[in-house]
Length: 286
Image 1 (cartoon, rainbow, N blue to C red):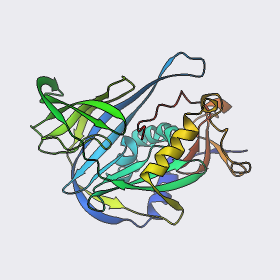
Image 2 (cartoon, rainbow, N blue to C red):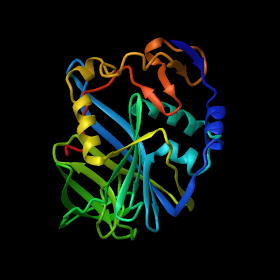
Image 3 (cartoon, rainbow, N blue to C red):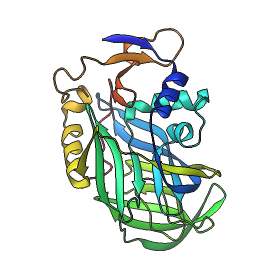
Image 4 (cartoon, helix red, strand yellow):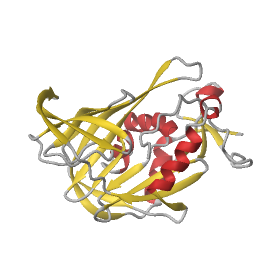
């Protein structure tokens, strides 16, 4: 296994310059959410995976991805070290980039299951929301409660009509205002409003030959079969084919060399092999 000290600014700059992207819409603003997954670790003790995600809200399309990556790639902050290191830390989760309503009526998600990359094709969710008179103030905005079911989970959401958008975190959408908070019925997942980025930027989209095209249903079934296996929390590499890690490198972001357990195993810039995981909680059950 090779060991490499990563120059983040150089790696990111080269990656961006090497890609050609198509502009499919213009984001009017971005919503930042604190995303938490509540689970247990390999020893059965409570554990939480926590990160930030951003939903870029366009006129027709929304794009959801890890917040620091959005700031680097979409908002042009490629030399901001805060975002560089935040994105580096978040890589361990291999978070997808999700487009809702591109093409019209459909979703596209660029996702990963090591050692493969996938282009996941689905339909825009149509959620039957039950609106409530309950209110809550979040981030200074008056919000109203709504409950709906999607992908096998019941979601309680809080939306504000003060921001006229039907968008929300991830695939949650379709309310009379922007969703600022969402929690599932079992208390495993939460999205909580953290702030707004009030800047217009192009919404870019790019497909690559290296992505395997797969339907949403097949991808969810495949992912859950691998990650919900009891072996995954004990050895998150159990399913990776022999030889797939031969060219992997051990990388750290800067400063003195870190202990082996704190380095990231990298197959490619955007493909990380986690060393330690909590029990996998599928966001989508079906």
